[in-house]
Amino acid sequence: MKVHIKRQNQAVHFEGSSELSSVKVNVDGPESIGGEGKGVRPMELVLMALGSCSAFDLTTILQKQRQDLQDMDVEVEGERREEVPNIFTKIHISFKLKGNIDEAKAQKAAELAVKKYCSVHDMLANGGIEITYSLQIN
Image 1: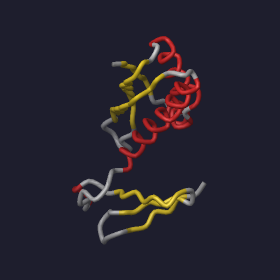
Image 2: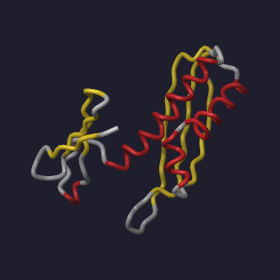
Image 3: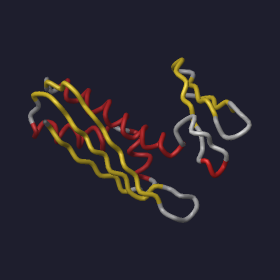
């Protein structure tokens, strides 16, 4: 896998692309270093990667369990330490599911999705970050 990061202005706006897809991602820094709000910040991308990786796996497992997943909303919140580098110390993933879903099956699916199948989780957790999750079904 390979990605390409191309500078877009004289500040810190970059465009990311991947050899696997034609989609472009805009990345920008905070105003304090010249950011202009033209993209997400790199640490936001880390949270998005964790959330989407877990959501993909949770969706797949629920489908295999023949659960009627109609919609999913995922929020990922991270706490960062004050010292540089400002790495995450804790991350919480909140899954909100809609559909005719058995709660016990969903809980087991979430456990597998986050802790067994999500490779982003493993990279972060093996780096010492505490990762928790919660599940809500309505």
